[in-house]
Image 1 (cartoon, rainbow, N blue to C red):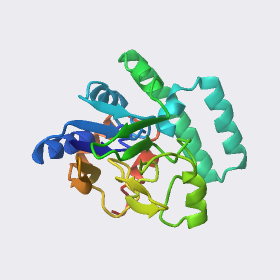
Image 2 (spheres, rainbow, N blue to C red):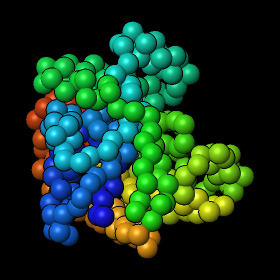
Image 3 (cartoon, rainbow, N blue to C red):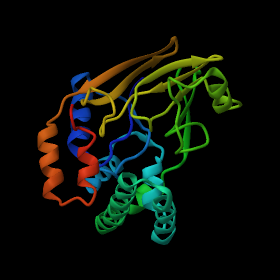
Image 4 (cartoon, one colour):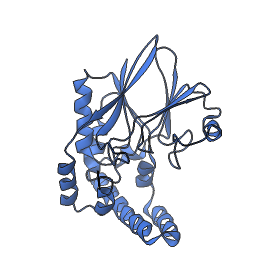
Length: 253
């Protein structure tokens, strides 16, 4: 059993295509697991959701960005206004831009007939590997698609609280955009990193190849190079309402 694991595509169909090409390069997979944040904060929400909606044997969970897109505008507007009230000028500008992007993203996804797929994504998914390993897929942490997520700098006590009673042996998360492999009390937490909008020095699209059989499983980090300059040109061409914010992910790298 071979599985492609990836997260945080953020509307970057060029990076997603690079991941797909790398999957083919390693001989293909039997299934794929997507850990959320498909469309927001990227140049091509329609292209990314369109690819994911017809991706064969794909198990998907929602990210906080996916949930935000599926939330009614009045609720998102009120929440955005509350954040802006206490935010710095720079953060307030980001919130205004992402709200404008939210409205734009909803419109283009509805027009393309893809909104329902996004809105139907579950919070989490549970699976079993051939050796009986119990797997939990969730975007940020067990029980939530937002917040700080699971990180390397958290204490054992913090991690224990997050993993208490989850009934899983392998927890696969995204959200932080940072690769992670951490085991606590017999529970392994794996983050494949992000396909797009990097926060690390490495700007390649990140994904993981899971190879499992009845003797156990193995996880291999994979990195797919793609045309970042071409992606940024596409970003400018669509007149994206949060263009400056998105460009910041690649600034100085």
